[in-house]
Image 1 (cartoon, rainbow, N blue to C red):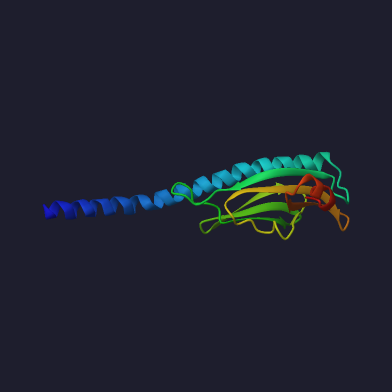
Image 2: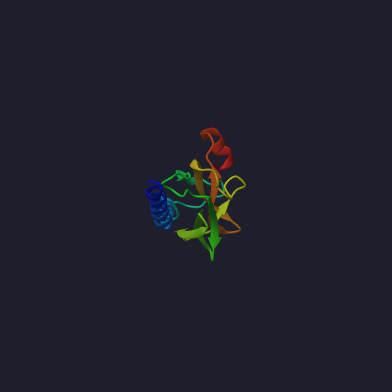
Length: 157
């Protein structure tokens, strides 16, 4: 009887050990897939914004979006961080899942952040406003947190 118990525990331990890496990969893939889908949609919105709207100093051209950072669960590794940056004059988004960083190109103009949007780390929904404006004679997309409509008129977001 005791041998059967020991054998059962050994077999269960081996099974769990064998499936843990696959589960970890699947969890990371779920989180990255969620971010890729959202950022593809955001990239299309920002590309349309840049192609169809004029960059004005007061930031009349804008797109309000919601981005959801997945939380860490049993089936999802969660996103630790999302950042918007500029690389070689192109706006990109970089996110971290577990210890892997992934980057996706968003738009052909630089993306600049404000203090509240330089790094998104809290899981859940983030309401952001992307504003096409001019800075030093160059068209840029600024990222702001969403505010009320009255505040948006006076402060770009």
